[in-house]
Length: 265
Picture (tube, rainbow, N blue to C red):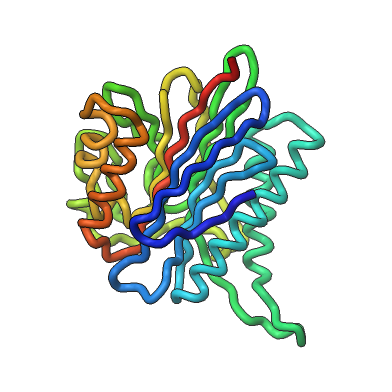
């Protein structure tokens, strides 16, 4: 399991060789201009093919710790469950509910007193092997996932935000959307209703998970142009993306995780 927070301008590369997939990923996380520290985290699981981005809610210190714990708890619950049963939406939902419960219980000091309790938005995906391989997508809050091809980006999630506008690859929701209220997050209420979706792995050549700071800073159209409007490698596109993001000086913490699945040969 890798839970990481990178400084601005640093791109990190990971490769997972868990059968039957090889998934290469690139990650970047940047502290927002109005924050003292970065409350975003991303996860590349070394135990299962799980990729996720978490955006902690609340004060800087609380947001950081909540995002760390959220990803760690989720990876633990899913890894344990998948040792006993095949992947399903129900298993992911149970893991999210268990993670929510642990976040609600808070982090306690050595004397048992409550030190902190905070919320977290999350989006993630898990590869499901088989004759027709699928990708299980899930999210709570306003972290987004896109599926990419040479033709463009397709939104695989819709923000849990009021007012909520449907994300489109051709529009600039982030540029025009007011800073609405997030309606769903982990660690806030006992009841949790995440959104789930399954897509065919072969429908996309790569996937991109972004915290809201990325989308607010660059906008859907600019992100689409960087990754799908140029005849170049994904690695070069991500380098261009990192440059554009740093140059935009995002106000909010900004994290992106690019995943390129490769079938074993």
